[in-house]
Amino acid sequence: MRGRGGRGHPVFTPEQRQKYLLFVADGIPLDEAANLAGVSRRTVNKHAAADPTFREARDEAKTAGRKARWDAKPHDEYRYIHGGCRCPECRAAASAARAARRATADEAGVDGAEPRPGTGPTDPTVISLPARDGRSDLPLRPLAAVS
Ligand SMILES: [Zn+2]
Image 1 (tube, rainbow, N blue to C red):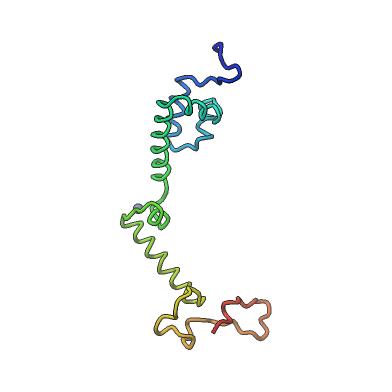
Image 2 (spheres, rainbow, N blue to C red):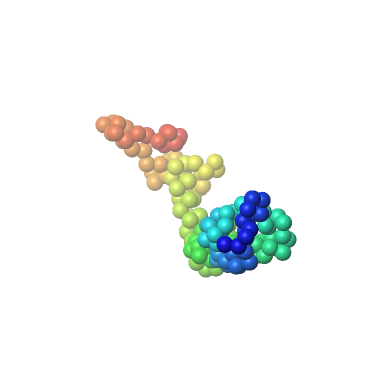
């Protein structure tokens, strides 16, 4: 141990900083990255507040880390919506999900919109009411009562 580490100025060695930044850039959560580097997140924050160069390096690492975490996520609807990804995979997932939502909304009669043409209450495929008689074990969903 080196002769510091007393109160007020926790040790955060250049090696630890280096490690910490690498972990963060790898997408490891900040708390965990600090732990892995052998410091507390508090210590890191103190140093970031006191040292603009380190703060900048940490910001860069965070940006890289976000990207790394993001890159690890699958391409799907979430990524389409929240990441603005427009790759074929995300687009397909997003439109499939949209179609599924639309179908569900039609079925439940929610959506807050007018029934679409051809899907009025008379359409037997729109609302399938469970038989009320003898099926008290199947609670009616409130929405099913809307005609
Ligand atoms: Zn994508």
